[in-house]
Length: 416
Image 1 (cartoon, helix red, strand yellow):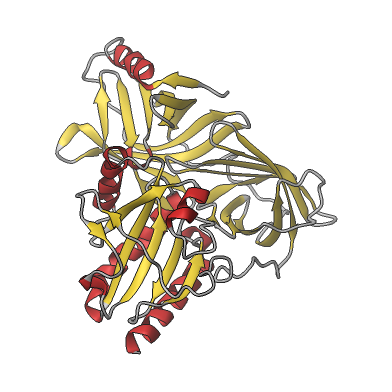
Image 2: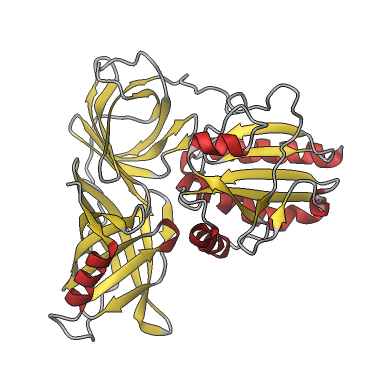
């Protein structure tokens, strides 16, 4: 299923498709759709809610549906008998021909230069189930699961993730926590002795399948990601499963007390922690990338938080590590991110998202291990806390605990 085409070739293909067949007056039946991407691991289902815009009959509001998340895509537009649903932040889109209550086409994502990855896509209106329709089951997977991605043994000898699931009837929602972030909103079903989970957010494409062994309470299966990724995985039910402390993984090198940097914003203005805006302020430094959905979850928390708290004497600065260090390429992506999340604090281009290169860009740190990583700096300019990764809202109580701890620390530093 691995497919690479030039961006120009695919654009031409769909321009020709859009100009053929039905007339330009074709419209999309509004409502909820059960959408499917055809991956190497099989069908990857997710929900779509498509509604016409109030002021333009050729424009649609579209949301991707995963568990409790309604993820807003960019405004969708008609092109002849086809609809184009973009997610510009992640340089991806769904393009499909309208055939009654069915959409058929492709998902495509730009990777490097003119190369894009594609997968077949289709969606049918009127269905809300994920993998299988709602049904009763005696299997319950609610709880925490010590998980090892990469294990081919069927045994959990190491733990590099913790699954947190909640089940109602045969529907399962939850995510996997890892030391560098979470797998966002997973949604799926139990069918017989098998678990199926999936997520689509415009960037991440996750499909999980596993067989449940009730005798020893283990799950053994496979995980398909994107167009080509695959990992076996095994999990053991364990209410006490834990990950390493996220405050212990990234730290300052011996002798360092703060973070020294000077990077440009897209407008060319250079930003450093020695700038007057940060003087005598508690400052949050966010290592992120516009390509990173976990970073977007954190930004979705930090942007409104900053609006509510900036008058207390706090500042935020984002260090963006993008796929290209060329401002002409990455500057517009940073600006799109700022516009989407209504970010009022500066975002600078710090380098590329290669972690080795990112570590060189911030030599005061032992390493950059994850995007996002968050540093909290006191009024004297000294780093007081570093949090690797981010437990987003898809993790439920783990996100709530993060927000509580974050606010408690900020309150303490503001009061000093």
